[in-house]
Length: 397
Image (tube, rainbow, N blue to C red):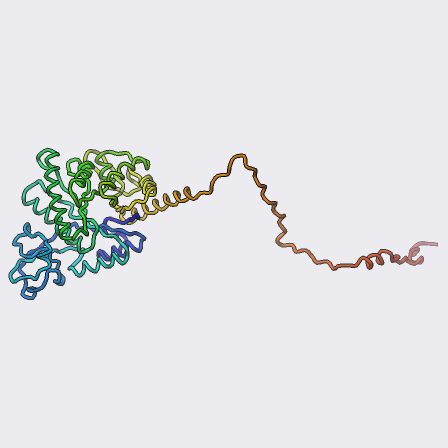
């Protein structure tokens, strides 16, 4: 099954909540939505007296993500701390986000997405830095973990994230260190979500940012539970690829499909690049890459894929890509079910002659039937002659 959807709440959506976006996506005929968890606003406070004895997930109008930690860097979410009763004078870390107000709100949004058959994924904050300093590494780790709490509450299939810049050492050493960091995140996510949400790593279009195509594919093979994201505009901008035919897309799609275990998660938009690391996302029709060849490739096999529109037009390009895919699917169906061609030398059967068209406005008159005997008597009857005086009238003697 191929699902299409935007990366964020649709632009045409009147409401700006996530539930409004899910309903709008369904009404537009789409079936996927990548929610954007961009701003992280954590707050720490001492547990109130009326909150003592309650579980963190039972708090109203509050989204608790950690209990017991005295600093934000140490506020690691765990199932044990979020499912146990709050004790007196414990430190509670809450999160303020536009996606949900509390866990009941997350559950309502999750039920709505399931009832409308809209697949949800969540994108973690874009700015992460695992090699800058120890504090920056812990803070980046916590941000991805806090996004994992929201992803589990929403029932998201994937938690998508970038990995930030390279370290001061060589690329090989940076890859080894990043593999250990990603391995810890993947194990934490598998434990917290009980395997329902997987970590998806997105490639980068900038050459100084970790996430080339070989690195992402090698990371997904080395670390269990990691899924590579096929971000076409980022890979095209980084490698300067020319994707004009379905054959050009085939090796790229097969690499990511095999590395992800058969499930393909794909981001697409137009792209314009001007120099190393200088690029911008554009609408699909204005970019240097075309979706038509990729649509033909997706119809050739029974792919299980989710196509997310990351262009500035969001749902408009998502619907446009879905239309191009449906047209390619129709052409394939017509090729498979076309009638066989006629054999050479076979005698052609002449087409039946069409009757002459009748005048549409004239109606033939119905003549009365006459008997032959009456007609014969009428012919034998002599004609009356004119009198002689009438014949000579007007002549002089």
